[in-house]
Amino acid sequence: MEPMLAQLRAAAEPTRLRLLALCARGAFCVTEMCAILGQSQPRLSRHLKLLVEAGLLERLPEGANVYFQLPPEASLVRQILARLPEDDATIAADRRASARIAAERARIASESFRREGADWDEIRALGLPVAAIEAALLELLPPRLGRVADIGTGTGRLLELMAPRAEAVLGLDASREMLALARARLGERGIGNASVRLADMYRLPLPDAGFDAVTLQMVLHYAEDPAAALAEAARLLRPEGLLVIIDLTPHERADLLTRQAHRWPGFDDAALAGWLGAAGCAPLPALEVAGPIPVRLWPAQRLAAPVLTPETVLNF
Image (cartoon, rainbow, N blue to C red; front, side, top):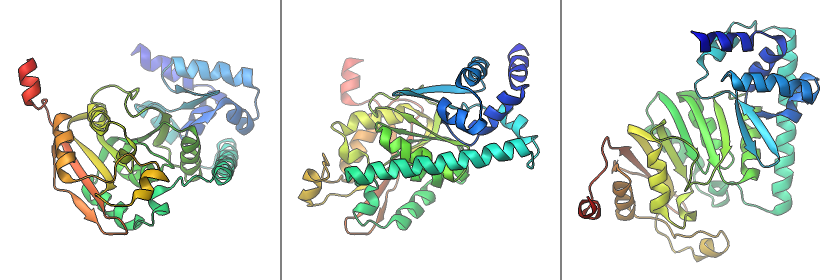
């Protein structure tokens, strides 16, 4: 009872309630919160500290900034916020200000990428059939999901796509620039059950078995060690959880290995089946989408117990 009472006390203050309502719309740093709420940084920092200590917000350091967002298990916060009147003038003003912040984020991120000439949306840059790929992914995913992680989330498009089916979606990427674009996308669309986090796909800062589904879209062909990347992705899955890999089939486009810095010229079913088996996953029937380079979706299910390979038997 005491932890719940502590959370209720922490939420029972006007500024802290505004902060919770704001973070239900996405992650924001203190500077952005100051601009939205019109309050000083020291004042907001004190409120944020109390909310984090009560477990109502989580703190995510990222470079020089620290972002604040609702934790995955935020049912009490959402129940409280659901009781706020939709026409509350203060909350509505905060919502409008947060939309302006999200639009500015998108502008800054897009300008940065245009200056650097980065092909940040690789599926479109390669002329691949986006709508068909997304439809194939939705066909593989169950209609209702719990927690979903998207590794190498890039601009966050898959988060936007999967959020309506999921309790919570988390995007992971090693690029701060990509995360800026993803935050802008999610903020502009008001997707409150999605968040992003800076992370290395070989060392994800997340506990074992915490997700019902994990996706990797156009990520594996950049991996120096695909087997290790898939093992780390599988580690996040609960037993019988779903892993979906979306990537290119074998091709002869040498320019992708040079200009686009791909490490692998596509993948075949045998290679994926071997890596997935070693990661404790059972491959399921794959789907293929035709295009300039065929794209394949490889689903797999996390087994309740690890697979015993000849190597593990010898070391047992």
